[in-house]
Length: 154
Image (cartoon, rainbow, N blue to C red; front, top):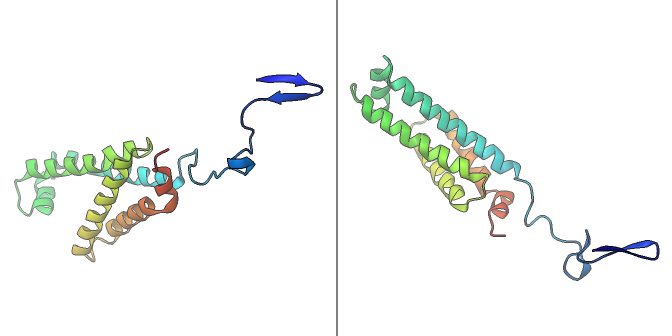
């Protein structure tokens, strides 16, 4: 409530600098804006999910035999290759969409997906350096302090 007491306005309730016992409030523990780590991680995951969808679509073209051979080890397994790429797309896209909505489970799912991507990248070295770097970046972003604090209960 605002009123006039002499020449100064009267305010009821906390002021802009009123923390516990008049101290400056701790604004680092619960940032209002989405941390840049969360934004970058969600963009990376959406990009990887989009690439998985593109690969699923390409598997349905005339290049499907070659793609299914790379993904499954034998030609003629296009349905298996499409199913695998669609599962991968869901594993990236669903958590990425809920990450910015502050759902803690989405962070844990992306940590698990990034760890599996790192494990797969290590098994396919040296041809998987780019994928290994992308998944290591995703894992690093999910484990940083601003990301952890942003997902803490309010």
